[in-house]
Amino acid sequence: MIVTDVANGQVLMLAYMNEESYKLTLKTRETWYWSRSRQELWHKGETSGHYQHVKKITADCDLDTLLIEVEQIGPACHTGAKSCFFNDILEVEGDKA
Image (cartoon, rainbow, N blue to C red; front, side, top):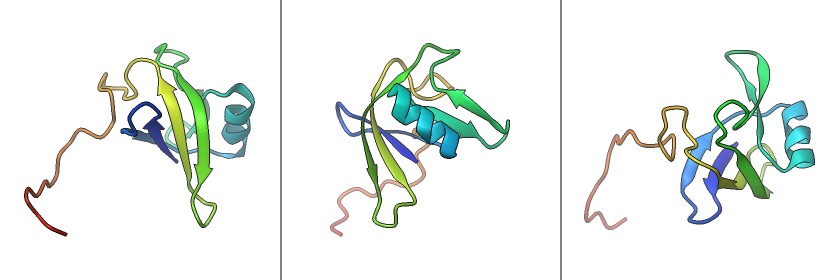
């Protein structure tokens, strides 16, 4: 699933959900994820205080990916960055696609 900031559309993070975390997200209106490395549920913000309040959930055309728009409290990334996407790989200036 892709998480964006409802205020400006910035992509904050990519994470995984299972059925239980999906149901908890719908019920609580805060994001819950499935940690593949730890094999456990985690509630975003539970230890950091950087909660994500869900404002909108949209599914893609295949119904296999979710776009979740959130009000982000504090940074989204565990590194302390606003977004997990800050490692530039390629930026082409003046390219007319």
